Image 1 (cartoon, helix red, strand yellow):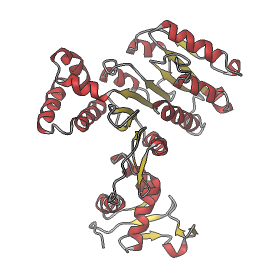
Image 2 (cartoon, one colour):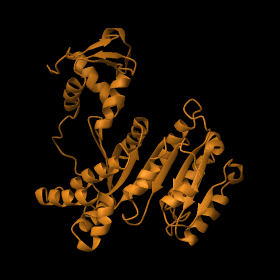
Image 3 (cartoon, helix red, strand yellow):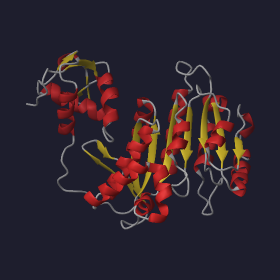
Image 4 (cartoon, one colour):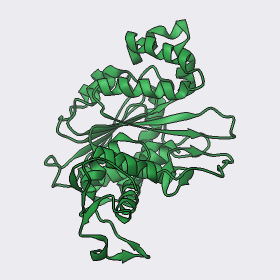
Length: 361
């Protein structure tokens, strides 16, 4: 699941950042600091191999995407090198992939020699959690256009928070004050340890320079298997938008068109009375944009970064309902816009004026 999400995101991300309107360098970089082999023992292809195969099918990426693969285990790096080299068309890559077998450190990132202006995506699929430090994230986010994703074995972090032998590693991740705050939150909210860890991790990453944080929980196997998280860190709202769209398509459950971000491999119990989440979004928009006028696209871009689930289509539906209830004014109005499948369209160019004080009818 994590490989599928990262693979789809990298392809969408690269197509955007290699657009010459936004990128004068003409290149972008995919950097995998814990790349692993080409294929696993069960025959499954690794994330780097999937990405390399897909890159070779897209001329824009063949010309513009640089790929850097590192794994501290040389045998895994060699395995990946051999499989990528054996792909049809591998010699057509403008930038030959680079391989290394070094610890994942700031020094390694510096050695890549990438300009701060080159858009970069880092994938950190490490075995544990100790390699993901705020200092490493801070170095990654020195770049002007960057995104990052890493795999978090959440139960291990929860166990380590209260383990004296793991204190140094936890201080490195959360800081002295952050760790004490985290432990206190564990005492105050003993049934919400997973949520508490994600809240504190989000703050630690924000302080390290990553303003956008999007978790994707997943559980493989039966319902009793531990829940893990794929964590996305971003610097620009567009990257967050693209990742949320990818996670939406990978999510197991949706309520009224709103994804419940996450994936469960085993049987899923669907609630009989799940509340419609759109009215809550309506209320938020009335308060957040009170007295303002903005286009649908501007409303979405500014507000979607404040939540983890709502997508553009959800904002369009919330605004349609507010319009129908005469809570907002639109230009062009609903009678002047076309319908599609019996529903009045709400394009990103429609202008919405909110009342001075948020209200619902």
